Length: 377
Ligand SMILES: Cc1ncc(COP(=O)(O)O)c(C=O)c1O
Image 1 (cartoon, rainbow, N blue to C red):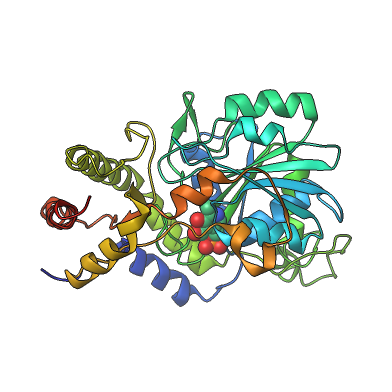
Image 2 (cartoon, rainbow, N blue to C red):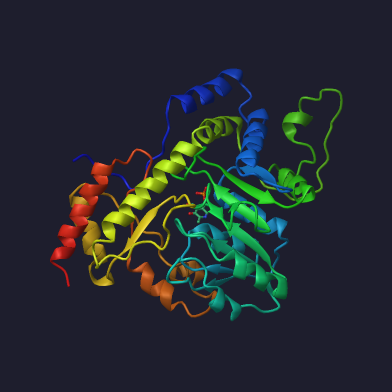
């Protein structure tokens, strides 16, 4: 059996043609393709009175979302510790304090009951991360938000193309961010997006994604008559380029096929692994969510040995994630009871999931997991 990677992008002729067209045209930076991609995303996400701004990565989208939420020095932002690094890093970069919260054992998303205990006057935002095919409990989060007046930032890097409470992800949080990195549901190679609720916030985002310019430079520099811009905001250099957007345009054209393929692969994994009582399968049934990864849980005592065994069979696996509160940079940050995070992080294994994964490869993976577990107690 050939090597089975954990993730792999789904790039075909259309992405290459689309990127080549931009390269031939010559306007490579921020420009009309980014606008087209934003329009297409907005249409696909069915955004109602919400506005989308594309940027260079999902990490930049998170940092900029904290700027939109006006997070400043001394503020506290609560987030799950079972997390990618980008959330906690972005909070620190704003001068604010990450406060680590546990996850719910079923969904592996932020535990709202434990979150309540961490809220105080300094709490200005909660970053809820949708883990794999599970969506955080935004109904309960919204009730808390009304009482304590914090902003909800939804890190939907994993849940692009999912539906929650009959609404497309992107339509129910104060701010939503997406990542389009090489292995996400759709990719622009590197890229991200932020959804906000007002045109004022959109204008602010467009300004800070390119050094605080009041008018996008592609517009300003083409106006030869006068210097047509001012700078009022402190800003980043976080724009998306036309080349990346062109790849995104080709990706979004095949989103339905990506979604149905990935949901079916996950349903098939669930069906297979439910037969093994030593494996805990994801909470999600994958009817309405589109995962970026597929995970299983096994006992801590043999989790790492199982990964090595699979590696010898040419099956690559991943870990999502090592808890943030255990990393040197974040060790001194405030935290609540993280018992579930500590437990599940040593049980999780991310199995291969990507568009071109075949059912026979899933059976090969399943058989090897089963063979390994047969000899374990
Ligand atoms: C939950 C989550 N948030 C944010 C990001 C950051 O996205 P990017 O890699 O585009 O910076 C990732 C990337 O994997 C992620 O998994």
